[in-house]
Image (cartoon, rainbow, N blue to C red):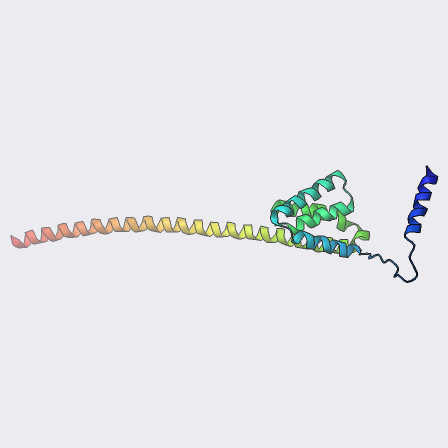
Length: 182
């Protein structure tokens, strides 16, 4: 069997021999950074539905075999997808172990992972600040509404007092007229 495989390999090598007049075959080698950037560009060009499918596929592949390559592909799919708070938390959880490795941080994927971590952290912080601002705004509005309600109640009370005083004034004028007529 081994002899058969070796003869087949030798046969393939003989087929690939190059004539002296033709150019030698060249293979284009891409770096890990080029592959990662290409993956990002591919993901960015997908429709939202296709992007969601790619994200789910990357998640399933990573969960089946959690190697660094599949983790990075899943991280990229999550990063390119429209962010949600849960995705940012999951993204940070996936990136942390990658960033924790000094050896990985020196690679192109490590640098990209660090940028993704910073971006996800900034988005998370911005979401928290926005939630706090909304809470403050709602508190101010509620405070304004209660102040407005208090002012409205006071205004109604004052109007009622004015009406009572006008009635009393009308009664006093009526008494005064009747006294002056006598």
